Image 1 (cartoon, rainbow, N blue to C red):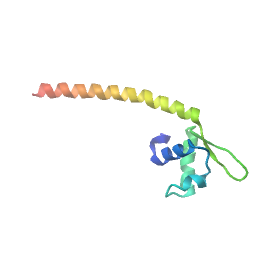
Image 2: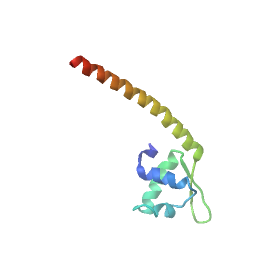
Image 3: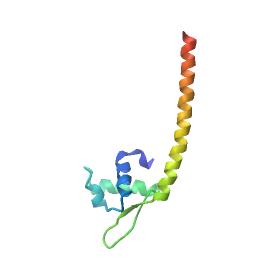
Image 4: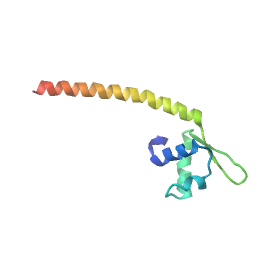
Length: 100
């Protein structure tokens, strides 16, 4: 998933403050512009970031609507994961009691 990498999460966080060029996104990281461009490509393929031409620059923009969709999906999975964890914990508790 595009947001599985901490650098991409940081890039999304930065873009939530406003559009930025690759050079601007590179500044807080110990990465090359080429590496940041690869991260942007992954985010763009996931629909989370778009790029456009403005004169000679190609600023990246956060696609907020798509991010909201992703967060809703994650939230639904979180509820499912918590339920599974609770059922597993209960099952293990019962097994532990039976072993006594």
